[in-house]
Length: 94
Image (cartoon, rainbow, N blue to C red):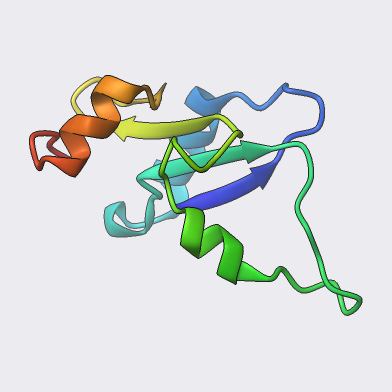
């Protein structure tokens, strides 16, 4: 999972996936992308990852939009309750 600060809402996830496929091995491409308007940082500009790890991709805890990678269609799709439940129940294939 990766958290991306997108203040303008202009991030093109299709283009991002194309670039990641060119530059990264498949195992390094994030399954989940969390878009946020603001990312908390410490006074030394480090991200306190504890909260991000705790919230993970749980749509019941996170207010930010989360996208999940659909390899079959080669795109990121917005994580909804139905897909979330399939992931939790082991029915969603990555």
